[in-house]
Image (cartoon, rainbow, N blue to C red; front, side, top):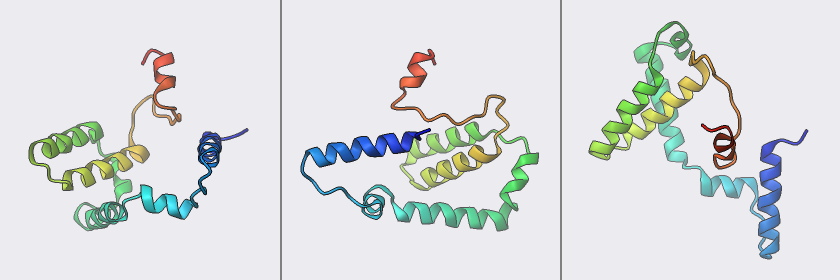
Length: 121
């Protein structure tokens, strides 16, 4: 079975080749697409959080409103423009990805929301 990322990569490469451009290597794409400073800030805050709050896997046993925490930080960013909130949002999202107790938790790749529209969500 072909994975979604393989199909998307083939489509992107086909479009690039049609334009007679040299396809970028994954390292070149990563350099363009990934803000390493942001990733390092996220990781540093997670490491600091270990010493402040304990290991993240302890969140399994705590009733944490992940979405509420994300929305609070988003509101803080909208008011102040402080990008620290964006780092916090990303970290809350990655913690929620692993430790959420949402009854319908799943991962399904959506192509620009097309799947959601078909299902009326």
